[in-house]
Amino acid sequence: MGNKPMYRQIADEFREKIKAGELKPGDALPTESSLQEAFCVSRVTVRQALKLLADEQIIESIQGSGSYVKEERVNYDIYQ
Image (cartoon, rainbow, N blue to C red; front, side, top):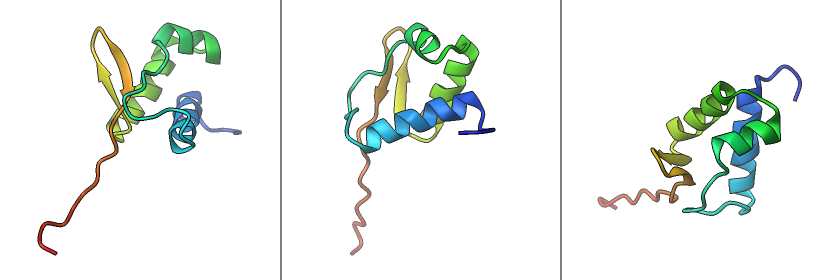
């Protein structure tokens, strides 16, 4: 993955897991501390990755509960 920042690499990995169906809408992501251990990174790096995914509307973070894969939004054109 070369020069790509670690938080982007983590976000990319979760994007791929979601795309491949390994993580489905409503599934919980691992905790921040388990992600820290799995990727050997700081909590700040994990939070950056989760924030990036949340900003892209891929996951939803719920304080005190965790981060979850969001339901896929389907936009219907009501004026068809």
